[in-house]
Length: 179
Length: 179
Length: 179
Image 1 (cartoon, rainbow over the protein chains, first blue to last red):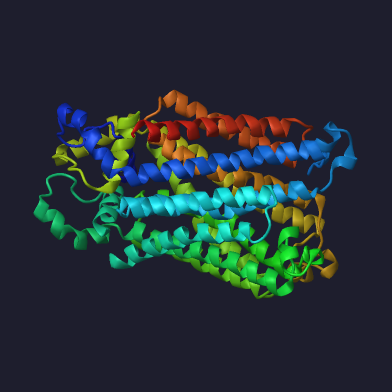
Image 2 (cartoon, helix red, strand yellow; image 1 turned 60 degrees about the vertical axis):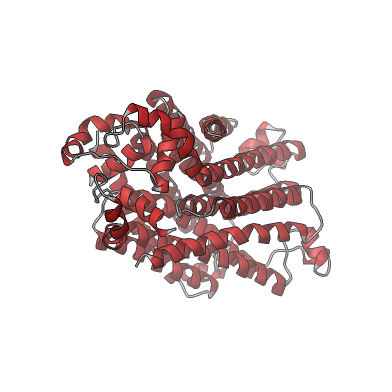
């Protein structure tokens, strides 16, 4: 059991000798090998920015709670003026719905995008998947927070789903193809 | 496309010789190497179908909102007849609870299953983990949406938790074992 | 830092020759190679325990529902005494908010921590990231459930965010650095 996990870690940490590659090979490799990694690097860029976007949404939610004096917990309300401030607020709920929708969509994207990046997709097609998702989710959040008129938010949500479904189907196809 | 995923699976399962495979070996390899990657391929199959199931649940929620005229946002209600339709509905809430429960359970499964697939488990035992989780979650969703009598939903939830806890403990065991 | 991420991408894209490591190299490797894998093993330890902690929170929520007789679904209430028990309860909602907050924070950590572990960070610095997050989240859950006075819970939440933002920025830096 342990030797395989070690192999994984080993390969991923990249330190140990992967055979007899000379230092010269290693030193020369990065530049041309980078082209091969374009897809995964691209995915990491968009996905990490989206995770940071989710963190910002949590900060915004906290700020709206403070500004509107609407807390979910009695202990928080007590600290900020009294138990009467343990209450719901439509703007806070709006932030939470935006965040909920992010959890439903961005978290599965982290999984699908990671696997998809390893299927050797065409770099431009892959970039298109990531970029459409990224832009769709950014517009979705803005539309939610700024209350843009319907159906802007729903359209952004739907467009962002296309690359996700596409990646999921390609993963399934790949699995079935290997049987 | 497939050769790269195979390489990944190959590396992660750690079985095949990463050594002196000639180009000829590489060309011949996929068929027999695929057997080694059975566990990861199996995991990808079940996990990706479950992600698609979550996406379908979001679509169903949207359809129930439209049919019951119950929207979470004033801007959506305005577009569909008026502010009076910005309201809660028990069927919509039911869909959302099913989705929430998926987030709590399927998303951690994506993580645990990925790692567990790299621990070189017995392919049948691994398949059993994935399959029990898969069936449990499908029944959970159906029981929620169709309002099957208690405790069908809770039993499906509990059964699906067993492989998750098992995988978590095996990962912990593996980590401790390597110290 | 960048050469290791490149190694990961490289290996996952399956292109490069993995050298001519002999069987002897492989057999000897585990013991000394384990040191290289310290970061990833460390990450797996803390992240898996946190996933188990989330599962425990679900169990606690179920127990509080039974004890307070407050169920979300009519079918559950019917089984436990009658439809009047299909109701909200502040202690149940408290558990659910704690769980929601875990989803918002621990799930992205699973992603960021996995990638970060492959960036060849200093093992002590990496451990510090994981450990601070771990302790912060444990205190957060306890503060929520035991209703510790504000702002203990918020402080624990904020402290746990620091390593997450740090890892996200390091991943972004790494991606940008490889261009």
